[in-house]
Image 1 (tube, rainbow, N blue to C red):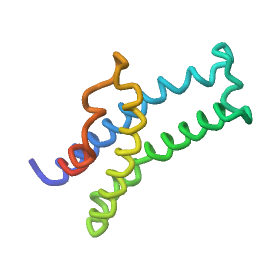
Image 2 (image 1 turned 180 degrees about the vertical axis):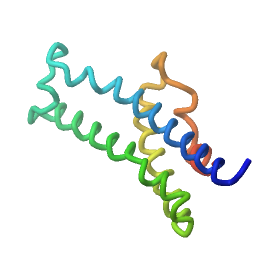
Image 3 (image 1 turned 90 degrees about the horizontal axis):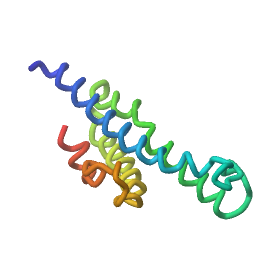
Image 4 (image 1 turned 60 degrees about the vertical axis):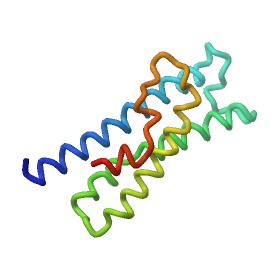
Length: 121
């Protein structure tokens, strides 16, 4: 397999893993913003609303990895820094997802260490 095809496949795998864990977390958070569940859409000034917004912002920031993944092949001189950033972002998402480790939709891959997700490719 040529290196360019391998890099594209690796990038796709990393992005897919980030999409799956983010989707899982968002599926847990989104109903909490629903007024039918007693929420003020998470935009109240109470501590629960603030914590909900903070968690969602953290997840959104950690899941925005498309540009980082692309840099892995377009800027090889930055690979170490990019991988560290990706590993940090994965660890943030993994920590949040593990709050629902007992949920039936929780996948074993969400427990993977960052070096298994980023370093393996």
